[in-house]
Length: 118
Image 1: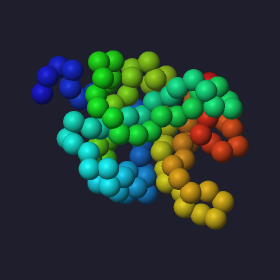
Image 2: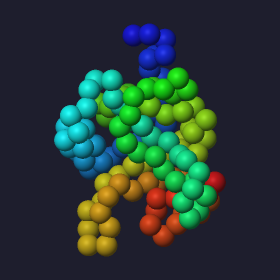
Image 3: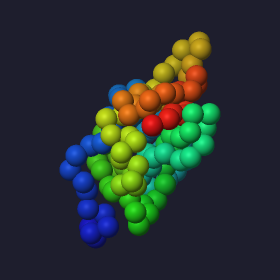
Image 4: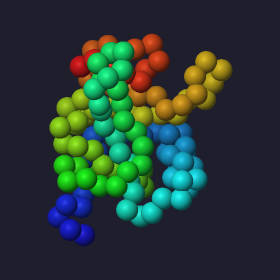
């Protein structure tokens, strides 16, 4: 393990059992390699200012690496201020199906829950 792959001890986010199950399904369906981990982050945009990033990717230079629920998780250190304490869940219902983000750092969120302001 090189220094760029050193795991950070604390877990900035929580991933529920339902979300873990869906992420494992997506990982296996996409036939990804061991180089791929789960990227969690934010990007500018969305109706509230920021939108969430959740997907599989390879490690980049600015990434912190965490081990969460069996996944290597990549997150840029600068994104932690927006995501610390967040819970990622999977909902399946008549009005909503998909990943949800419960973020204690969000001052407001949009109606669909995929963007927020900080």
